[in-house]
Each structure stands twice: as C-alpha cells, then as structure tokens.
View 1 (cartoon, rainbow, N blue to C red):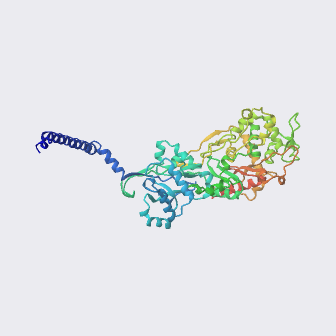
View 2 (cartoon, rainbow, N blue to C red; view 1 turned 90 degrees about the vertical axis):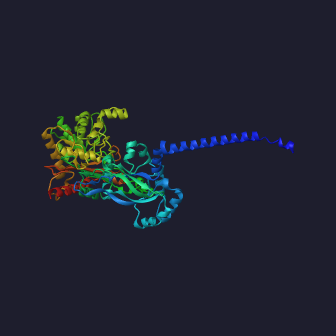
View 3 (tube, rainbow, N blue to C red; view 1 turned 120 degrees about the horizontal axis):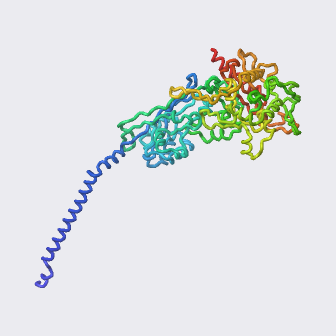
Length: 613
C-alpha cells in the first residue's frame, strides 16, 4: 500500500492541469478574437460590398427597348409600323433544368424545332445576366392562358408584350424598306461597349434597305428599370426608371399608289421599275419583281421559307433595280447623240446612208442594224433616235471616240454609284481605255467603241442609273442624287445636286424633241403608248442581248430558251413640256420594248392624274 502511493504525483498533475487550462484559455481567446475580426470585417470593413451583393440578389436593372421609328410614304400612309406581340422568353439564370422547362413548355404551347434552334443560338451569344431570351413570338390568347395557369411550374419563364416590326404592304416595299431581323452572333461580335448598351433592350437590327441605312435614327435610345424581385425572379416593385427615347420617323418621297401600279404592271414578270421626281431626285417608285414578304424575316424566317426564296430561279431576294446590271441597249442613244452634238462631231442636219449594217475600214466584220434592210438613205439624228437606227450610232461613236464618249456619259451617272440612300448599290460599267487595260490587260479597239455607242458590249447599267440618266435629260442637265427619304424626325432632307451638265440649249432641244418623236412620231418605236393620253411624253426604247448572235445569223426567238431571249427596256419622262416624272423599266427576256413602254405609261397616268387632281 505505501509503495503504491508513491506512483501518484499530485504536484505534477497540478502543473499539467494549469498548463492545459492556460492553453485552452488562450485558444478560446484566439478563436474569439478571430471571430470578432471576422465580424468586424463583415459588419464594418466590407459592409457596403456585401449589402450591394445582397441587393443584387433581389434588385436588377431591366433594359426598356425604345419604340422603333415609323416609316411613311409621301402621302402619310404607314409603311412600317410596330405591332404589339406577346413573346415567350426564358431567363436562363433562373432555370434549374432548361431541358425539362422546354419539355414542359412544349406541352403547353406550340414550339417548333426551329424556335428551339434559334433560342439556343441566342443563348450562346454574348448577353447580360438575367436578360430574357425570346423563345416564341406572337402567342395567341389561348397560349397565354395556358402559360398563366401553369406559372407556378415555370420558374424563369416570362410572357410579356413586345413591339414587333410589321410591314403593312408585305412584298410591295420589301426591296426598298428592307427588314429588321434578330441580331446575329457575327453582328454582336462587332459591337463595342456603347453599341452593346444601345441594343440591350432589343433583339432586332436593320438588315437591308432603309431599315439598315437609317438604323441609328430609327432605333432610338434604350431606357431602364431598377426592379426588386422575389426568389423566383418575379418583379415585386419598380425602384426607379428612365424612359426610353423613341426612334425618329422617316417620311419617304415614295408614292404607294404609283408603287402599287408599277408592281401590278410587272404582273409577276421578272423586271424592275424606277420612277424619279425630275425636280428633286426623290424616288417616287422603286419595284423589283418578283418580290417577297419582308414580315417573314422579322422574328426569324423558317428554314423552309428561306429555302424556297433562296433557291428560286426567279431570285426574289435579288434587288433588281439597285443591283441588277443589264446592257442598256438603245436607251443610252440620246446621251450618245448629245455627246456628238456637244463635241461638234455631228449637226442635227447631218445624215448617213443605212444599208442595214456598218463596216469599219479594212474590216470584213459587219456591225448589223436591228432592221435588216436599214432605215434609208438619209438618216438624220432625229430619225436615228425615233426609229433607233444602230448604223447611225455606230458611225457617230466611231467618229466621236471612246474618250469623249466616256467622259460625257459619266456626267449622267453611267458607270458609277448614284449615291441613293440604301446600301448594296452596284455601279454598273461604262467602259473606257483605262478600264479595259486594267481589267483585261488589252488595248481598246474601234469595234469596242461601236458596241458602246449602242449600249451593248461591255456596257452595264442598273435600272436606277437609267432613271437618273433620264431625269438628268428631262431637267436639261440637272443631275440630282436619287433620294428615298424626304424627311427624318420632321426635318426635311434637302435635294443634292451632283452635277450640272453644261450643254448648249439648242442641243437639249434637239435631243428632247427626238425623244418626243419616239412616242408621238409616225414611226416612233414607242408610238403605241400615246393612245388616249391627255399629255405628251418623251422616251427611248431599247433591247439588250442576253446571248451573242453569230455573224451572219438572225435573232430567232423560237430557237432560244425563254431566259436567253432579249431584255426589253424603256426610259421616258412626262409631261414633255414641263417634266415631272422620269421612269426606267426593264423586263427580263420580254423581247418587245413596247411591253416595257406600256408599263411606263401606266406609271405616268397614275402620277399625273394625282398631280392634276
């Protein structure tokens, strides 16, 4: 027993206990200190940061899209409006299982594979967190009701009213107004921060036509709302907001009644019509046929519809009046004749003998006149224009030379962009020595000049260029830039005079009287269109070869497929004494220029009857 007591050391145990107690106390003090420091950091040092982060869990900035500017014709008729549409959208950040949500939505409303693919494309694009991504547009009342009843199952799903672009005349203005469409990933990648901010409230952007050219003015300025939401993302209240600024309205020079008549006159045939106000350069009508319904593109065209348009042989998406480049044929002969007078190569009284062909010295090739037996022994300038004598213009072109012909024709807008206020215009081709040397590495030959003098060979012009040329002739040399928009946001857009073609007054009289003879002369090539008219017109017919005819052969319409037949053209203006409107028409593969002239007559009638009433 006594020996066992020696194994227990009370003094040592007391020292161990004290040491452990001190260590525990120090640990408690240290941990308490750390906790106090953390509390201080949370409640004092970083208080504001955490308050802000907390607010962000329930307060969000929602962009408010501005109302896009409207577009009107010259008479105040609405051409492009904004129509209310109910849109189904998903806020991806508030959805736990996107696949399940899409399946649920598919049971409630009609959602196509095309809708889902477009939704996924937009979801992959750069966007702000909590921005709703559209899934379906144009919900009907029944679909809205189904979604409302099932709202408790659809976290992150929103149905809201949205203004969607609507083109009131469908295909009538498709190539001039253009259309808006969903912002693509490529377009979004090109946005800087300011541009990205501007489009934070909208999913659409102008793609072609006036919608693209005037995008910055039509768009407006985005607004915003600071909103408080609950845990399910539903808006509880608006904390503050800034109203968006609507886009500016456009008023056009275009006249819907004239546009409709020109479209109807084409009657489904491939072609184009352009009508210009002689006094200002304002575009009264611009039609490309066949056309398409621009509304198909607004919320995203289906693959089926796009394939039908894109693969059509008739190219409805192709803007013929702006991008179609055609040989102008005899329609340029008034300009060639004017060049001859201006450079003193001919006088109105000079005549030539026309056996039905023209031959250069030491050249066996015959340059044929369209009239196989020719136009007579004494063909002067008036007859040459009225009856479209090719031989006269072969001779004139050869004596004039390509240099003077090129420089003079350029003043009328040939071979250059007109500067019209829609994008993607093509410049045509008004050949010169320098062009041929640069493009083909070849010298210029006299035969090239002969072809240019009758609007064939390498010469190409758009219907818009031919209308500008005709308006410049009608106004005696005042070459205006063609303009679609007459006013922006109530501010008038002034006409732009590009050039004043300086030619002696008597030369204008000679050429314009010859163009008058085309329509009202006994042998004029467009005399059929003057019947029943209570006003007088001036014009020039033309045909343009699509395929070359071998030397010594005649044009045989029956031997050619329909799309290889000649194009038919007409340019003209009215009234003759006080010109108001200039028109250019092309009918692809129509052969007869009288068909194109009849379309011009219908356009003249509508415009002049309105102006005189």
